[in-house]
Amino acid sequence: MDIRDRVAQLQPIQFRYSKDIDPDQKLRAGFSAQQVAQVFPDAVIEQGGYLFINGDKLNEYIQQAKSS
Image 1 (tube, helix red, strand yellow):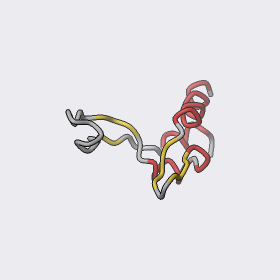
Image 2 (cartoon, rainbow, N blue to C red; image 1 turned 135 degrees about the vertical axis):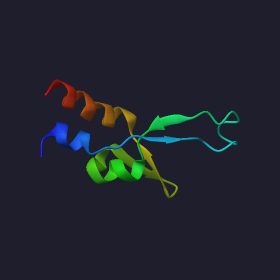
Image 3 (cartoon, rainbow, N blue to C red; image 1 turned 45 degrees about the vertical axis):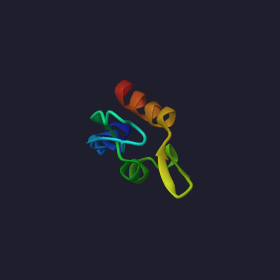
Image 4 (cartoon, rainbow, N blue to C red; image 1 turned 60 degrees about the vertical axis):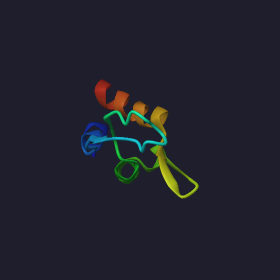
């Protein structure tokens, strides 16, 4: 599977942070770390039992897909 197909597997989601993180609870868009981990495991890190997306690494993959 080429890089474009792998990136195309990622489905954007909309979400709001809790009030203690964002009092205005603005609607945001992005990717779920759980889903990214299935496609690009090295673009996700675990800290304190939570998964976080390494934005720099994921952006590298997205840029590769754009240029291929």
